[in-house]
Amino acid sequence: MKIEIPTNPSARWEWIKYQIRSQGLSFAELSRRLGVELGTLTSVKRSPYPRMERALASAIGVSPAIIWPERWNADGTPHRQRPNRAESRVMSQKTRFKTHCADSNAPSTDTHRQVVTEA
Image 1 (spheres, one colour):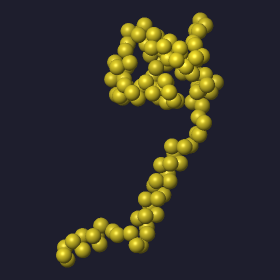
Image 2 (image 1 turned 90 degrees about the horizontal axis):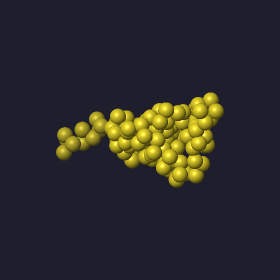
Image 3 (image 1 turned 120 degrees about the vertical axis):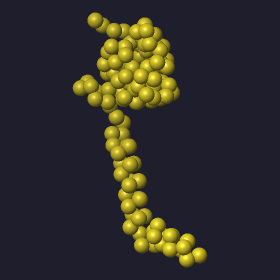
Image 4 (image 1 turned 135 degrees about the horizontal axis):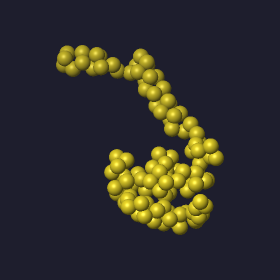
């Protein structure tokens, strides 16, 4: 069965909303089932969000690559503009924290307790 999905983003979003409603669901009910805020679910309208895209596609009964071919690879994996962005940001925060803790000039909790009890 060939599904005609609009390529225009606003028309595509209206098509998605229609498909969700035709399944007897609402965005509010679907967001409750997923345990996320309604705004999180609808954020796929503006930017890629693979988990929410999968949830919407699953509710409609198609794969996310059919709805968002520009966001998904042919093998069913999300297409990412910056594939390791989140992971590298988390690692840099951990590295900064470790560096700060290893710094001999950084005050330690024990030093702080000594200063407080001596005062």
